[in-house]
Image (cartoon, rainbow, N blue to C red; front, side, top):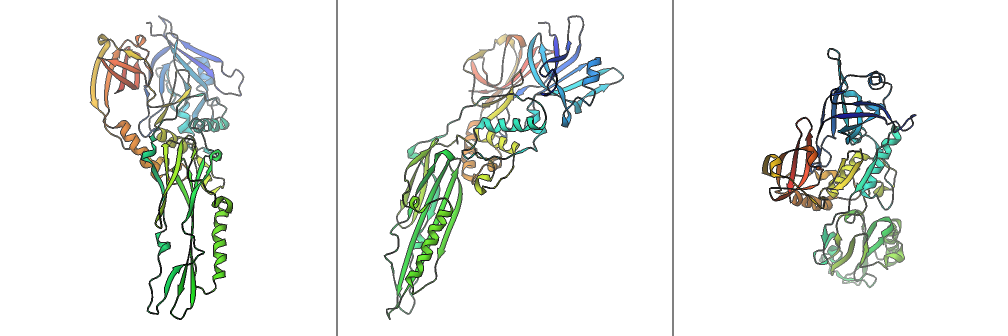
Length: 494
């Protein structure tokens, strides 16, 4: 191992002559070091908060060449927000280990020594630099998790001529509820509709008129292509009151609910509740009945559909059913995988009015919801991956290479579930479910802090499984101290 570095400066401006080609290089030789010093931060899984960590950082020092003077220290060769047109690829003994952008705001040139310090970041840095960008999320069926990331990167690429490669290694996780453990997603009480007025001293008696519905109409309207489930409830009760003088009056009660479920269980509720005045003209109640029907029609439920609703059905990864306690309530239920296959960020889905949504908020919600992470590989690709997607094999660490090893119990971190509120619908129930899932995932994990010698001997990456002293761990943080030829890592016990 010679520990020789090479830094390639690559044209990263997509509309520039020579895009993607190496424009300049700094290369060490055994007796002539072009790179005076170099350090690189570790690869880290993001915390429960998903987006709080700093991107991977590379810092190196050199004596500026004429090319560097003209192209890096010059302010003309940069995008907005202090991003250089030129990107770097860093090699150690001809092995690529970092690709990223140059942050020109952190250039530091010591005139007395003539040494220039250059700070670089992987392209995850661009997500925070452009956290103010918004997107009109409007695809009716929603967005796959990787699309949330992809549209954010695409929106950045439309602002500056830069390429941001990405790769999905994400698989939809499973949080399965069997049929016997159905989740109640709506409870509609109608017991008050069946109550008679308190009889007065004048001797009124009450019965339900024959035009009353004996039980409510309820069930599901499925729109699988729009990735939405609608639960519908309708009920009508007519009370007939008669006094001792045989005078008869009528009172109509009408109730309607249209509950659209986004992300499987996140409701948007539209309500109709009306009680007529007492009237001797029974025919006048017909307009009240029609008003109830019109309520459903205006909310996308045709009259024919209202009276032909489904009691069972499925969409994507969830199955739906209902239950009823006669004259009291109707409940909507679901079972299956509670993780939605697609996401619908923003309130457009509720209002159907164009609305811009913060890209960063949609990304944060996606990562939080699925317990996923993003990081970059050596070639600079941003990778979306599940946090429990551990590599299949194991890397055995020789006891002789273990410099230090500390075992500790992990501290539980309470996730900020408000992040999910950017998604359409009332996410309260979804937040509670996901919070419990995350706490179960992180609760009481045993972890290690270890230092291992011989960087070149162990090719260790995030989520690799390693075996130390007979115990298997999953790597969640890895940092290479190149100067001392050591690897520092954190890992969860499996």
